[in-house]
Amino acid sequence: MDIAEQLLDLASKAGAEAAEVYQAKSLSRPVFFEANRLKQLETAQSEGIALRLWKDGKPGLAVAYGAVEPQILVAKSLELSQLNEPETPELNGADRNIYPNLGDTIPMEELVEMGKVAIDLVRSEFPDAICSSQWDCDIETTRLVNSLGLNCSYTDTTLSGFLAVEWIRGDDFLSVGDGQTQRGHLDPHKIAQSVLKRLYWAKKNVNPPIGKVPVLFTAKAADMLWETVQAALNGKLVVEGASPWSDRLGQKVVSPLLTLTQAPDRGPFSCPFDDEGSPTRTLTFIQEGKLKLFYADRTIGRQLGSGSTGNGFRSGLGSYPTPDLVNFTIAPGTLSFDELVKHLDSGIIIDQILGSNAGMSGDFSINVELGYRVKKGEIVGRVKDTMVSGNVYTALKQVVALGADVDWNGPCHTPSLIVQGLSVTGRG
Image (tube, rainbow, N blue to C red):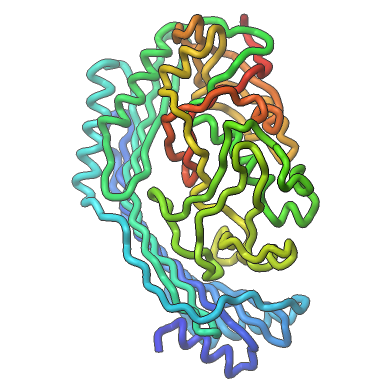
């Protein structure tokens, strides 16, 4: 028997009515550049295992890293179970699947070359720029085994590259960053060109428009809006009455231009099953502005009466599964980014923000770290000392255009979008 089967066997012999073993392994080889030069190469490896069992209906969860003593881990889980109240074990039944690795590894030497290429491209046009960069090949394996016969696992290999540029002109400091997360291939030229485009836009400093103006959120900045939406769609917060959409199923909650889904089989963050062993699946939460569905794990799905949507995930080995999303996707529009800009007669573009995102209330007041002024459909320069405020729920009812330029911000796939009439303050 392997370690997972040993733990299940020992838990059963110790009187546990049910048990599950969650294993996570990762291997990462990041490459770091600092001040335009290669700084260091690293190899980071971790391996952990979590045993969750129920004895007399009471759950106990214990975690070990590295080498594991099965008897000790079972004893710890049993001891912890006596501190908890009884609950219904939430386990999936027999399913045995080993899913193929969808990604490809890249040797460290190739990651180093990518970093050099990206930095050289930027400095060939901005020789005074100071570049830092990180490139990584990350391999993660997840396995879940339980006493009902479940035994499934998958391995992810993802590649990531990020380039940050500091450009100092006297007392004017500019920081620009962009990157990619992909499977199988990274494009340092595309990353560098994205950064260069932003540096050219920011060559001239201009005053922002003041008052209620249209705001274009780039795909990179739009994530600020979606974090609040993801929370509002969380079944746990719905059960607790904390979501403002708890009683809005079937009603219009955002602009009819917006359709929000989950696509777990797409992109570099695809995932075949959640951390409870439930298969993940394509879901539509909001269709053309109308609220259709909340996401849930097994426990919350039972309370909602909808069942699990395959969204029970752990924030760490020592955590219980709780509702979370995988590959939150905003259906794109048909306009290119340049066409979105031409839609603005007088407005601003937000590309990078400072400060925390909006909470559940949706109210936000953000400092624009990197933004641009638009006049008569043209970008005329960078805005500084600018703040934008509003409410996420109100803003999403005022979306007037969506771009076709979808991009990944972590496991969120979003286009750029224009929101009509946010409040802008600054040195105008």
